[in-house]
Image (cartoon, rainbow, N blue to C red; front, side, top):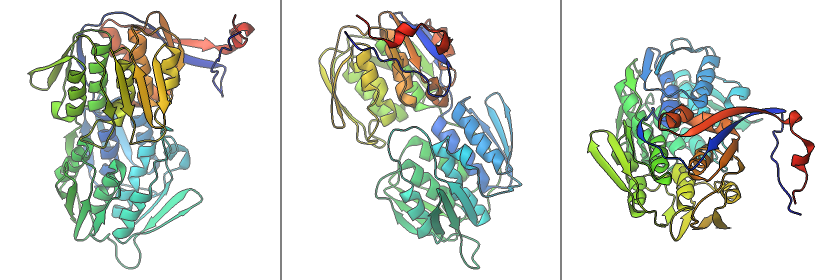
Length: 449
């Protein structure tokens, strides 16, 4: 007798699942939304100015709503009209966002730098987010302390203050032991209003860091070197409001490129910035796909026989960890043996078990996944373990024979703007269905013969 594992929701008898009818062709054009990770940091950066800022190309995501709630808890006024977000930061009524909000979103910790720099004090709970690894805030704290802040952590809350009679942080030379995006952005924002010059060595080089620096510069900051491993910030006394448009989301773009590849479909997508996708495009081409950039800010994927390749995730400009799960889905039906090595997060291979439920041949050895391509995946009930794993399971379901149902859609909604609708417009067959587990027959929890 084979034991069948049924993953039931822990806190409710009702849940919404995504049901996918696989093995169908896609065709058409996809509009790529604004970058989630840019928008979250830039929303926090609006706290640096007392003027209103208008952000364009803001994606409609659960994470964006969470960050909006964090800002609202500080007394900030927000108004959304389609993809435009107006943020009035004139009156900040508190420097302590509530734990219930911060615990839902790791990026909410970004408010500590702007609050400290503008108010001289911040009380920010330690953050939450996807359980993909122990992402400590040590580098953030060390950077703030190097600029003269007094920081202590008590009862899960980070207390940061500018001591004595000084009302501004002080410029400093800061070396990051690891090119952390979050630490780079926290220090960068705090340094915009500091007295003197701050230099961040071994800074993160991600496009989202560059977007944040460009936004701050548009508000009147003096930031140089974003996109390189040394960023220099000359502090100014105040910043002003600005209208600013968020860059396209390179991870969403990469996900749709893989959607075309895994379903053997020709798709085009825009707007994109191809330079942000260099490692992703290189691996797709190495696997035998043709990627065409025949129009400005537009990419087209032309499918072909899929060949195995090896991938190692690295900080930008290396291969992004946020595309690892999607490529694992693709490599699982590619000809030959592949190895994926995850070096960024220590707990980001949990989706392997879900792919294996769909017939993938994958072995884990530490932080490596050894993948032997199979001819076809088969539909199965699976569970999303984190944000990017959720989209990877959608991709696998699109290519699989039969029906796939995905549990844990709260992960998907955190980072993809209308993913299902965009896929349906391309011809995919998928829909959300509500399930009441109390109405299911008892036999599903028993062994099957």
